[in-house]
Image (cartoon, rainbow, N blue to C red; front, top):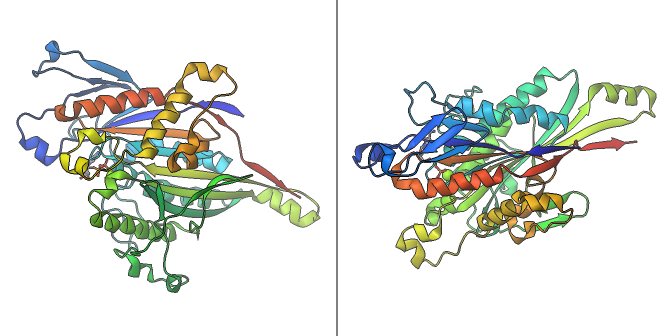
Length: 395
Ligand code: ADP
Ligand code: MG
C-alpha cells in the first residue's frame, strides 16, 4: 500500500481556423517547462493586466506546430497514459480523465481523429490517434512481449452518462453476436436504448447493472468495438442538441493476469497456489466543463439542468483536496450523489493511479473558462490516492 498523488497535466489546443481569421482573437498562453502562464491584458503586451502562472506535473503545448515546444498526440500519450500500462500489469487500477470546456480538445486527446476509419487494413496507430487507441495498441504489445512471464485476459466495456442515465455503447442486437457484422451497427443506435443503473457490489464495489462486457484477444478485435462505441456515441448526438458535449463517456479495460511460472507449479504439483492480479483501467472523456449560465440563451430556455455528475465531481475533488480532511480519518465525500463519481470512486482518493488531463483553449475569448479549468486542475493535484495491488489467491 502506498500513497500516490493525482497526476495533473494540461494541454493547450491550437487556435482553430475561425479564431485565426478573427483579428481580435489572440493566444494568451505561454508555456515554460511545467509552468503555464495566462496573459491577462487588453493589449498584446500584458502590462495592464495581471498574469496568472500555474505549475502542473506536465504542460503540453499543442498550440503552434512550428514551435519547438509543440506536443504531438504521441508525446501527450507518452507523458500521461503510457506509464499506466506497466502499472496495470502490476495489478494497480488506473484512470485517466480529460476535463475542460467544450471544444478545448478532450475528445481529440482521448480518441483522436481518423484513427478508426479503416478497421481492417492497418494495425498501425496513425499520428493523429489519441490516447485510447494508443493505450490499447500498447497493451497488446506488452502482452505479446511478456507472454513467457504471464497470461492476460482482457475485457472491455464502453458507456456514456447523460443526465445521470447510463447507456451502453457496445450493446448489439442478439443476432449480431458471434458474427462479424458489427459493421451493421455503425451509425444505428437502438432507438430504445434503455438506461442502466449503478449498484454497489459488497466486494467489488460500484458497477453498472446489465452493462455488456466483451473479451478481446487482439488490438484488432478491440478496435472493432471502439468503432461501434464511437459511432453509437456520435449518431446518438445528432438527435439531441449538443448531447455529446453534455455526456461523459467511460471506456473500461479489465485485466486478469496470471503469472506463467506459478501456473506451471500449480499444474505440476496439483496443490500449489495460483496467484493472479486483476486491475481496471478507466479512460474517461468528460462532459464540457463550461457553466450553463455561460452558454447561449437557447440552452437556458431548454431548461437543461446542471450536469449533476460534473458538479459532484467538483465537490468530491474539493473534499479530497482539503488538507484538513487528510488528517481526519473519517471524511465525508459525496461519491454517491452522482453516477460518475460513484463509478469512479476508486479512482478518486481510492485504490488507483489517476491522471487528470485538463484541456484548454489558447484564445483570449475563452479566458474565463480557461482560468476556471486551470484552478480546478490545481485543486485536483492535491488529491492523494491509496494504491495497492489487487492480488487474489486461489487455492
Ligand atoms: P472537446 O471534446 O473538448 O469538446 P474536441 O476534441 O472535439 O473538443 O476539439 C474541438 C476541435 O478542435 C476539433 O475539431 C479538434 O479536432 C480540434 N483540436 C482539439 N485539440 C487539438 C489539437 N491538439 N490539435 C489539433 N486539433 C485539435
Ligand atoms: Mg468531445
